[in-house]
Amino acid sequence: MENVFTFEVGEEFNGSRLDKWLATINPDFSRSKIQQFIKKGYLLKNGEQVESQRIDVQTGEVYVLTIPEKKVEITMEPENIPLDILYEDDDIIVINKPVGMVVHQGAGVNSGTLVNALLYHCNGKLANIGGDVGRQGIVHRLDKDTSGAMMACKTDRAYHIMRKQFADHSVKREYYALLWGMPNPISGRIEKNIARNPRARQEMTVVYDGGKTAITNYETLEVFSGPKFKPLALVKCLLETGRTHQIRVHMSSIGTPILGDSVYGNPQKHITQVENEDVRNLLMGIDRQMLHSKNIEFTHPITGERMKFETKLPDDMQRIIDFFRGE
Image 1 (cartoon, rainbow, N blue to C red):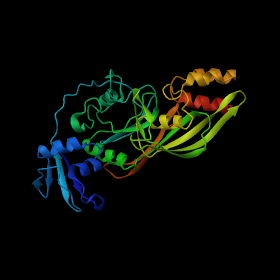
Image 2 (cartoon, rainbow, N blue to C red):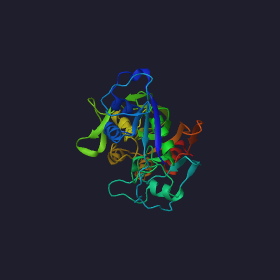
Image 3 (tube, rainbow, N blue to C red):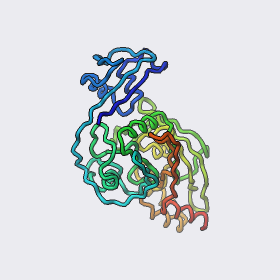
Image 4 (tube, rainbow, N blue to C red):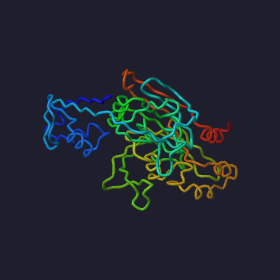
């Protein structure tokens, strides 16, 4: 089956270069990918084949992109891994991802992932735009040790529409995190660009020149304090953008890293500074960053219904909260 997409040029893009405009409104496709599509004759304007990416588009013009189905041999093996499913239909699936599960194939990882589990559960029916083996259906991701609500797409049409929703920030994602220390101010907005750390390519860092825009809104819900230990805070974070490690990097950048974050938080240093023995023993049992995707809200890509899915805090985070509440 062909994938057919129709785009009309809005006033704000009048005079923009064709490939740049298409790449801007379609985050799935880079400019180089758009250029390949044009060379292959996949793009039409008024029913005629577009010959060059260097033309300027005009308000009201309509372009049709037809991408032939790409036959891809799936090398990821379906695996019978239990899933906590919050919702499912023919086009999408929403799950509560457990701690420790990698979302998709990566360096040295091609089994035990969410994709492996979804391939089994969905009987291989997952979106596969571009033939990106190992990432079928994945429209956004959570870190391995971050738990909670996330969604995936079964059809290419749903995938394409959801990618646009993520790009225009109409998807709402709310995270809960436990922090070392109390943020100052207790609620606020962090707008700091993020890029790869040049000294450690697997890590991200705040940059003041270049990088990608990253915006996190946070609200302190509860502060846990007592004798002989630095206060801890339970915060709610709302993402306007979705950069790799965004919340972890942003919270660390304001001096309140996420509890248990071994990459951006140096947990051993913090724990050794806790004089209260009961608190120190509790915190020594933490083996991952205390970050959870509490809920996700989006418009169903096919029906247009606005949907919201909520999850409970995982046991390890709830145990810490209950301890300080005296429950």
